[in-house]
Image 1: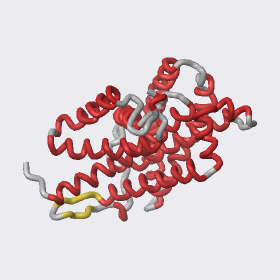
Image 2: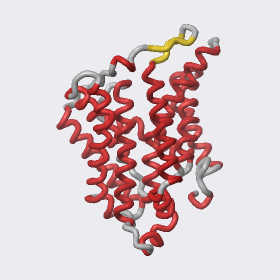
Image 3: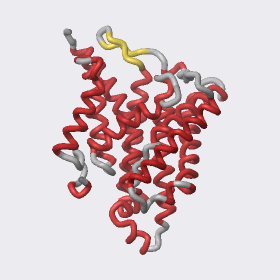
Image 4: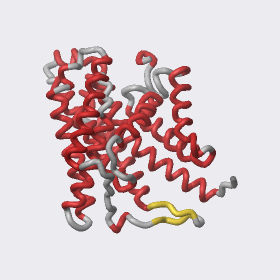
Length: 295
């Protein structure tokens, strides 16, 4: 098959938009692990709640306000649910072994799935885009959706805001200190439990945002969180557990591997991601930007 430059560019942009969604998801997951040392399998379920909330809000709110309102309100509702889950459930297992954390967060997936089925039913849902984000940009005859540029913009904006939050604020310094020496942070008089709650709220807000952003591009269905959580785990492993910039780098790599893998072997595009994860685990188990002490 012949590939011209414009087609390759379209695939590159497509991979970049996919990478930004993966980063929005994986950044929250890796923050949770980096600070709280919790393996949160339910992160994809919060992403699914965000998508379904975006569907409801965009239907209730009329006109262009529907989508934009959903984009702001849906992640807020998701992070409120996330804060409740952290206080009621996760706070009890911080000092437990990882197997118990996995069992609890995996059980949450089924609870949330059933809750969504009771609230929205089992039929697929579709979120409508506002007119300003519909349409295509053409590169030498190859169309590319305008909305994908919006996804890329959101991803870049979130990456910049996270950098500012973690590097330039007191809260970010406390997060980094808690990731290394949470007992020392507690001895200095800070409420580590409250800090962990804020971390989980922030992470689930990112999951809700990614669900609301991706909702107009897919058909919403039960179990959609499990489809994306596998890729997110690959991103977190490849980038380095607990390293947000590693998650960004790994998401960019994964997005391009998938985008160009479709051109080469369409039926095995996902296999390239698993091969990448396997190589990282074998030769650099602490990830591209992780530390050897995390191996």
